[in-house]
Amino acid sequence: MAVALPMESNPETMNKYLQKLGVSDKWRMVDVIGLEEDALNWVPRPVLAIVLLFPLSDAYEKHRRDQESDLLSKGSQAPKDVFHLKQVLSNVCGTIALVHSVANNTHNIELKDGLLKNYLKEAKGLDATAKGALLENSTAILDAYREIVRSGNEAGAEADEVVNNHFVTFIHKDGHLFELDGRKSFPINHGPTTPERLLEDAAKVCREFIAREPDNIGFNVVALVPSQ
Image (cartoon, rainbow, N blue to C red; front, side, top):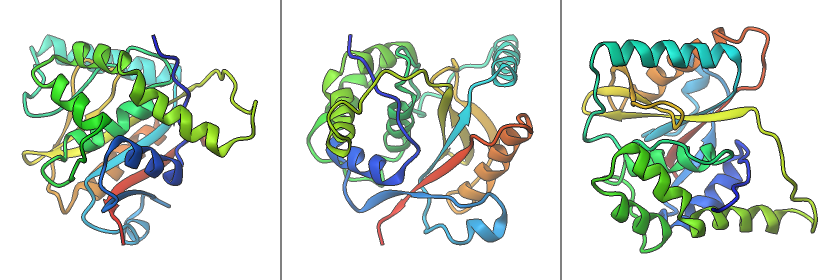
């Protein structure tokens, strides 16, 4: 089993990782400096995905359990055309967030032959749990991030960390806004959106995450956008 390193919500590092995985340099992650309309206007368009980093907490766990129970009681099933995988390893949620961002936008993003293209090919037809297990066994994908971290740090700077943060991804698919969380059994449908309104509608949901944690400042948002 590969040991995963925690990911920082750092666009520069994420972009190096995406390119190592085979994502075209025509796309990149950028910081979203604020979640109000005027700040969102600074984000390049089109936006293909939004990634939120937030603190794991009792409030999140309660919300996640309640949400899952509600979905199960309604007999909800995962939409077949949304790529969603379950988290198996700790510290791998950042990689999962990037995979969710790219895998649900392969109609826009050119993938070179390589690690991510191979993974998506092998994952085709698998359920979310099997996709997660496949990622766990894709040591080259996890090692690619480790190499980037090592190249940016002094020798010995890499250490085991206890991480209390988590990443989730928001995407547009078939007219709906989906939240993709590796700790949840289903993609969460947050209602109608369009490719043009994805950022604004995802920002509303991000603000709900923040409202559940009024005493916590550990939030950060990045977006997958065209390279300028």
